Each structure stands twice: as structure tokens, then as C-alpha cells.
Length: 327
Image (cartoon, rainbow, N blue to C red; front, side, top):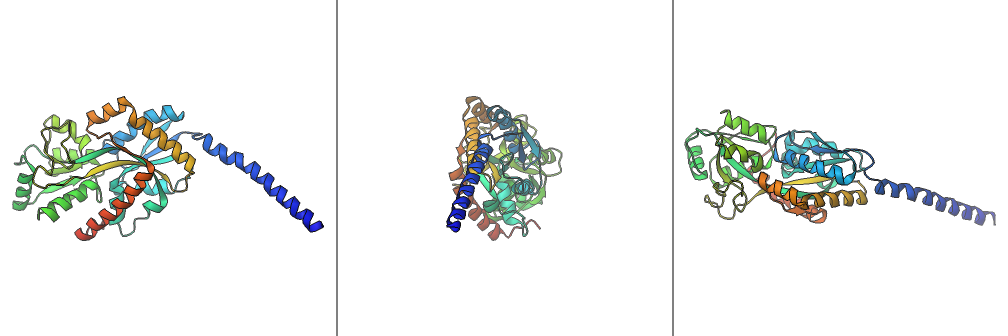
């Protein structure tokens, strides 16, 4: 009889504890965010990902009811920021905004210190960007075929936003694998730095995401030779696509993705995803993105996770065939 009473008491205590814990867990998600949110950017100021981060941070601050603070953590093509967020408290107050350059860098690194699929939770992608090949004004080329021909006749240097970035790998794939020539790579910390390097004559070519290059090409400070999207950029209608320049079917974009630590509660992830997609759908945001040279497509979390897995497989194959490494 005593045993039965003790069991009953134990059950009552456990039930009471569950009731006490449930409201606190519920409060954790319904009160989110309870303090400012850090939006950690994998690249320095001035590049496409940074532009998106600052554009969205303003609107997210309004919709979330807390400040959203942009924090740049450049290096290793976004992988440094990825590792920082993966190790952060999984409470939704530290969010990563990065590109698929992070994916490539992790694939290329012998010791990446980050497993993207296991340690990060994909939330959404917004504002995909094409890549543009730009040349210094005094380089004697006016098209991608002419650049390839020049690269076969003399050494050329090209700058990108870092080792393992999409702009880096695209050059290696297009020039080395497809065109059977090569240019020497000079890695910079971001797109803005690579573009400055091309204008200053440190490199002859810059391979970067299109948006930060648009005003420089429009002003004649750099020559736009080709973009990697399936269609020409609306902001640079005279710049042909790589497909038009002799490589049919060639189309690659850089996505801008939001992530949280993998263990973040689903309710918090869902709340942030909802707000991000709502901001992306605002007419004023769409207009700004289009004027800056971005696409306005979005991808929700479930599809983003599937696409991420496919992309890891695809880039792994490219890296293996090209024998690329960060070392």
C-alpha cells in the first residue's frame, strides 16, 4: 500500500513539474525576440550579402519589435561567420546571413570546423545574384571570348571575394575546365575589395556578384564582360550572359541565405522565416532589390534545406574534379 502511495505521489510530482515547465518553454518561443537580434554577415561591408543584410535588418527590426544589428564577420568565404553562429546559443537571437560561397569553402577545406547540414538550420533564401566578370578599362578586351583568348596568350590575374567563394569557383570551372585556359587567382575579403583591385590595376579581372559592380560598370570605371545568370541583368542590359557568349545552358546564381543554430526551437525558426519572407514580399523591397541588380525570388525553409543538400553534392563533384583546396 505504501509503495502504491509513493508511486502516486511521484506521478503527481512529475505531472506538476511538467505543468510548471510547459509555460516557460512556451514563453521562450512566444516572447521571441526578447532582446536585440544579431545578424552575422559572412562578408565585409559593400558586397551583395552585406547589402541584403542591411536592407532586411531595418524592416525586420520593425516587424520583430527588437533591434536587428548587422555584424560583419568576414573570412574563409563566409565559413568563419558560419562557425560562429553554429556555436551560438540556439535561441534565435544570433542569425547568420551568408551565401553558397560558405558551402564551397567548407567543401574545399580539409578541416572546415563546420558541418553545415548538421550544425545550421536553413531558414530562407532571398535575392539571388548573378556573377559578373568585369575588366579594367585599359584591358584590351570587350567580351568574354576576347578575355579567354587573351588569357591564352599572356598571364592574367583575377580577383574574387575569397578562396572557395562562388565567384572563385566559377572562374576555375569556366576558364580551366570549359575553356581550357586559366588565370591566376588573387583572393580578396569581399566583392568591393576585388572591384577596387581591378580598378587600381592590382588584377586585370574581377569575378564578383553583380549588384556591387553595377554602379561601377554603369559609370565606365569597369567593363562588364558577361553575367552568369540565365538572362541579362535588367540594370546592365548591354552585358551578355555567359550562355550568349558561347556556353549554352550555363547559368549559376549566388543565393543569400538566413540560418540559425541547428538546435533552435522550431517555433522560433518559423517566426523568423515568416518575417523574412514578409519583408522580401514588400513592394518597396522588391523595387530596391531590382534596382540594385538582385532577383526577387525567395525560397522557404523546407525547399531551402533540399536545395542545400543538392548543392553540397553538386559543388563537391566540381571541387573534386578540379582538385581545388583551400590549402
